[in-house]
Image (tube, rainbow, N blue to C red; front, side):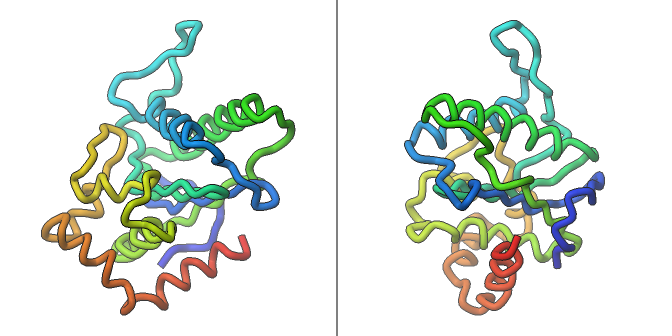
Length: 204
């Protein structure tokens, strides 16, 4: 089971369910390009080769220090499941991505002020078997989850590949990607557990 949402609980070798939403539950993704920008920001920090800004200055390079196991970007909130090999890397990733995306969004839509509601929430997952259910909860967020374009499910099923998306730690719990697909569909037996995850986030 996950521990409470304590942002200061920053440990090496830890699995985290990260969640954040728009201020006042407003949309943080409006057009398809917004999703693309956010995903490219994740890629910026987690690609094999380090990337540089327009001035030739390298962005923090977190490849090998942190892995994104699964994700889902919804219109007014987002979920990430990450494995942090070295303490502090999750904070570096989230600070860099959320700050850059907020600047992009405010400039694009001519707005001011915070885009995200307070700080992101990060639940440390202490039971590895619970990782299965967290990933399933994340992938089942969209109503049309089977055809949703902005989750990591296609990477789990072998339809897409990217060097910055690392589903292996979850898929290793199953014999084949097809078994994981069956696990996603057959969620009724674990509905109570999924509802428990949802209730934890509802009052966050």
